[in-house]
Image (cartoon, rainbow, N blue to C red; front, side, top):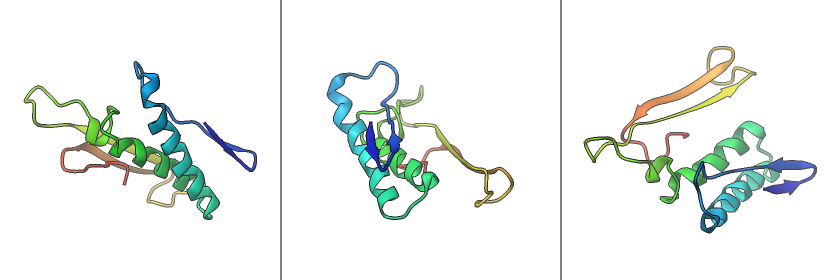
Length: 107
C-alpha cells in the first residue's frame, strides 16, 4: 500500500501469496503512484499497477500465469472499465479474452 497526496493504492498478489512477494506488490503500487504523480488519472494508475504484477513471474497473472491442461497455453483475460467511455461504449470496456500471446493482457 502506498499513499500520495491523500490517495492510496493497494495491490495484492492473489490468494495464497507469501510475504516474500510483498516487494512485487509494493513495486506495483509505486508504479501506480508514479503514474499519478506524472499527471495520469486513476484509470492510468490502475493499469500501471496491474502491469507490474503481470510481468512478475511470481504472480498468477501475465507471465506468471498457471498453464492450462496442455502445459503450454495460459488463457488470460483482463478488463478495464471507465465510466467516461474513453475506449468505446458506455461504460467503456477493453477486454482481452483468452489472450495466449500477450505477456501483459492489461495493455
